Length: 489
Image (tube, rainbow, N blue to C red):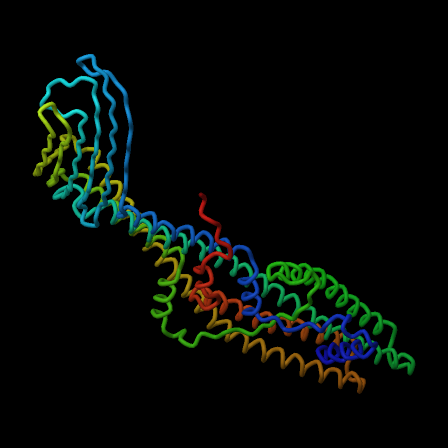
């Protein structure tokens, strides 16, 4: 009846004048999924999460740059006095390009060029002015510390773990926002439902009051009857007005979260998305384990600890490097005896070894890394234990909420029949006003219990669906941020 009255009221409002487009629109049903979709599309937390994740993703470029080519060069001119008290003008330049490979091998190509013009030479056998040039190719191959480039490997793991941790942290933040929104939505739905129940009860009380007033005119009812029903009516009206205050506040908060206008009206729904495979408890657990952001964060910490263990073990090794080099040099210039030109090839093979006599620092670093690994493992086990109890609690709540919905529905139907039967007896003079008011209160209470139980079931379903990752798609925070700043020059 209330819904029909609202629809008729809207229709009359729309018919009242030609300015229909300026009239308030009838409220639309706002489902939980639609509200969350609006929050995901509007709330700044989502964009912040995307930016933070994109920032963490840039760590991969920083790690990969460790294997990039590095070019260095220098050049200079000088005018100086030599050890034989003569002046010399000199120009020198050198360049080097090299890189380190994933294996840990360091490869370098270096070249040098020099030009010198002295006023006096120490011996006529040395050309003056003279040009010197040299080029070398060298390899440093680690067989102990540094073999396999653990710094680079650990950097890759750290970058991956940092991205994993940042993504998990942002999902955790948004999950909390969504969970608060779920609670807010069903709190608002409960308030709205109680307002509708109050409206129905007010409508029934008004009809009863009119009936008693007619009977009073016929001398069939007394003053106490009209006073009793009026007190009941005033109590219901005051409850409705109080609920409207709460509904206004809750509606405004939901509009703020979804980015809608201040005065948008809507109707919350008690519908819920069932989970068909509730019987497969182990499957539910595995899905929650795989998706839970706190567990994902601890997994990332476990990976970092493992990488630090490997890095600490590498640092504790003896250094054993093989250095190989090949190259060539030339010396050109004029001498008193004629033009001088000398070219030759050079080669080198060297073994470098280093042993640290005091390894206490390495041992302490390794022990700390192993403790971090153990701590992350214990945290994962604790989360698995907590999630197991949480999921079991939600599954049990769903089971018994379903039973409660059915029993409260039966109670509501019985209370409604009781009231209708009492009203019929009242019209026939076989019941009094007190019984009608008592039955009316029983019906009102049973309706509240029934509607509230449906909302509680929907709320628990939503919480479990959130744990399973069915409420919102985490892919929305893994996209690039809406605006990408330019690289500083």
